[in-house]
Amino acid sequence: MIRTITNCCWVFCLLMFASDARLYAQKPPYDVFPPAESPYYRVRYEASKKPGELAYAVNYTLWIPKGVKTLRGVIVHQHGCGEGSCRSGLTGAYDLHWQALAKKHDCALLSPSYEQPDKADCQMWCDPRNGSDEAFQKCLVDLGAESGYPELAKAPWALWGHSGGGHWAGGIVLLHPERVAAAWLRSGVPLLTADPNRKGIKAHKLLEAALKTPTMCNLGTREGVTEKSKQFAGVWPANETFFNEIRGKGGLIGVAIDPLSSHDCGNQRYLAIPWLDACLNERLPKIAGDPLLSMPTDKAWLAPILGGEALPTAKFKGDPLKAAWLPSEVIAKSWMEYVKDTKVTDRTPPPAPTNVRIQGNKLTWEAEADLESGLAGFIIERDGQFLTNVPEKSKNPFGRPIFQNLQYSDTPTQPLLPMQFTDTMADPAQKHTYRVIAANTVGLKSKASSEATMVPVPKASSR
Image 1 (spheres, one colour):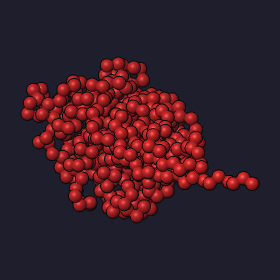
Image 2: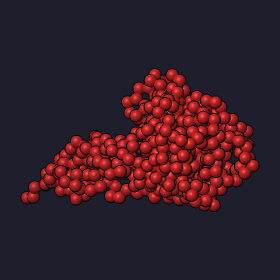
Image 3: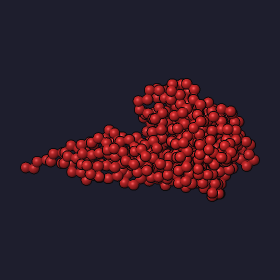
Image 4: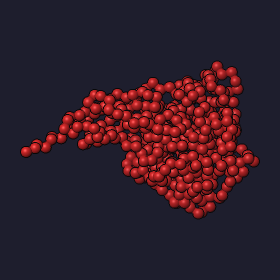
């Protein structure tokens, strides 16, 4: 059962989040569910009319890595506000790049999808105190039972949220800091101090434990940093205030300004995923079920939040409590590349495709994304020679071209692209061998897969 809440009004966020829906504009079947068969699992809760409970229906889709014995955590990919954004959450758990992060750490990948009507009040779910916190924790119990991984109910969380989803993820940090390994807040933050410009928004309390949770505020420069558009001018002041309140008390929080984007997610995943990876490396306990480990601070680097150069803490000359906190040298160097032009360096090729099969003239395969740079597409070879690219041309209106394409809120488009190719030019009477090569978004190629052989079809004899 899911719960209703008291009505509240946040003029800035309603304007901002309502525009999210207009910017999505994905054609049908945007409201069609991808299948949820193992390793995917899904639960849906109906809306409630009871005060204090979630007023919107919600779907939670979970992906579990193949062969994992015990889950060590849950990575949550939370969409933003507005009808279009909510629908985009239907595919979040199917994202190959985010799955690579989850698999590395023996974590599940969870993607909520709230059924928020067009122009309805986003605060009715993006403030977790309005029923979505309770629904979120309930889904972990129910999905744990359905999937056979009951430890989901108590596993720690790594949170990513866009826009209203950033507001939600930040709110969860403030409510349950002991459960959150790290949180990435893209273009949305909760409120810590009452603000007359944000009427109807309840401020959160800042618990001491929340200061120890690694958090990154990330937004586009056209959200009030260098350009003050009417729709998104308030995003930067809200982020700056949130950052200052936490960092001023010694909190482990940073800021990463995307120099190319507005309220869309741009190329943020190429810093967000390595940053979350670094935090999970340090914080997840070796034994599942043990408390989160403390985030080390002796390797930290600092940087001016609107600058481009990061330095080790000992060499930083400014006020450390006004500087972006970065967990390590590796992340600091990636941060410097990201805030310059988002071209984060990657020197490791993606894994080679596996399970390549040919049936008739239809070639299929399986592949995992490169953790650092995801998947841009595949190269098909026939008889040792280049045949085609799949897809012929990758698309992404918001950043680097990527195999699954991307919606405005960093989730794959529907229908989900299959890993398959039909060779209509092959001579069925000839023997052909095929190999598949994966390419990541910086152009690095994997080793070729094992070969799959097309068995020739004998020609019928004529009499």
